[in-house]
Image (cartoon, rainbow, N blue to C red):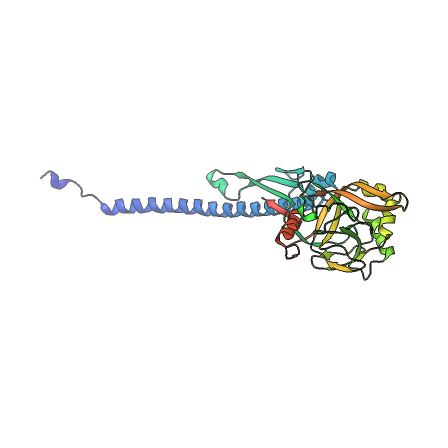
Length: 351
C-alpha cells in the first residue's frame, strides 16, 4: 500500500529539460561556427591581399636586378606600400605590419633574385566572443629571371648581332674556333667583326629600314650611356623579326674611339640579338634569341683604328620583355644551346 502512494515519474518534464539543453548547445555551436566562418573568410581575404602585395613588390624589385641593384629595397617597399591588406597599406609605417626585402645580387651564372616578406596582425571581427582576438598573417614571394625571352622591350639591345652557330676564325687559315652554341654561361667567347676575319658578329640597325652608319653610331652612344635615351630609338625586337646587318667599318671605328672604348669595357651588361649563320654582307637575318655578355677585352687594329675582336664573358641575365620560346634553326644541338644561353624575363620563382 505504501508503494502506491509514491509519485509517478514525469517523463514529460525530463524531455522538456533535455530539449532546452540541446537548443542552448545548438545555439552556442551555431554562433561559434558562424563566428569562425566570418573570421576564416576575413583571414583568407587578408592573406590573398598580402600575397598580391608581396608578389607585386618582388616582381617590381627584380626589375632593378637589370640595371640598379642598390635601388631594389626602396623600389620594392614603395610598391608594397601602394597595395593594401586589411584596409591598410602593406608598409612598415602601418600599425602591426612588417615588410622586409632581401635581394640576392646577380652573378655571371645566376640572374639574382628578390625576396619580399610581410607579416600583419589582424583583429578578428567576431571571434573575440569565443576568446580569439587576433592572428598574424604571413606572406612571402621570390622573383628573378627565369625561362627564355621571346620579345625584348625597346632601348635595351646593343647594336651588335652575334651568330649562334658560325664557326669563327681570327684569320683565314687559322684553326677554327668554337661556335657560340657550344659555350656555357660563365665562359669566355670572342666575337670577330673585322671583314678580314671569319666573322661571327656584325653590327645591326635592328628593324630599321637600312643598316646605315649614322643610326649605328647613334645606337652605340645611346647603348653605352654616352647620349640621352631617345625612347623607341632602339626598337622592341621579337624572335623571328628580320634585322638588318652591316658589313662596313662604322661600328668598328666608333668603338675604337674614346670615350666609346672605355664605356664599352665599363658596361656591366650588353644584351645582344642572336642570329644563325655567318653574318652576310649587307643582308638581313631573323632573330632567334638574346644573350647577355660582359665585355672583358677589346682588340683594336692600331693602323686602321678599328675594333677587330671583342672578348666577352657570357652572363645569365635578365631582360625586360615577354617570355616565350626561342627561334629554331632545325639543329637540336644549336637550339638547345640557344635555350641554355638565353636571357630570361622577370618572373615569380616561388611564393
